[in-house]
Length: 47
Length: 95
Image (cartoon, rainbow over all chains, first blue to last red; front, side):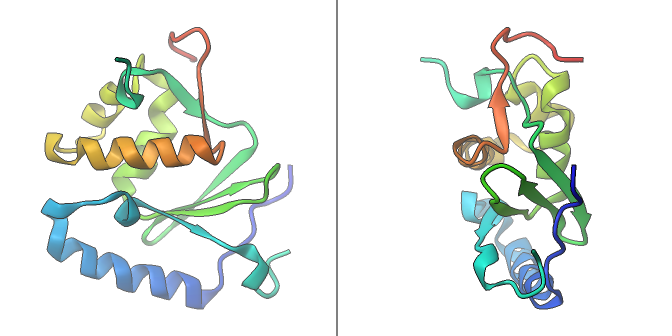
């Protein structure tokens, strides 16, 4: 099995920013706070 | 009615989880979907699903508060829709 593709640094940074915001509204947790599908079509160098 | 939390699940064999600072990246080698798991608790739940008789017990074992179970159920249903996790047909433990 091939290795999983790496997310770009930008993608990871964006997700970390969102996560920091999510921590302030922990009581109102939603599905979108937990999972996010990312299109790999726009990720250069992933595949 | 049987809900997502009452059913037995396991991580799809077609999925690789890679740890990230925010949680983990899930990549499906079949449908090529890439999904951020944005909580460490969710990652723990997904990894442990196959060791529990149902998703609810996996949530409890991972320390997910009851107030968040609905959101986690929705997230697990979303992961199931993308074949990141799969129903265990036997409904029993998959050790």
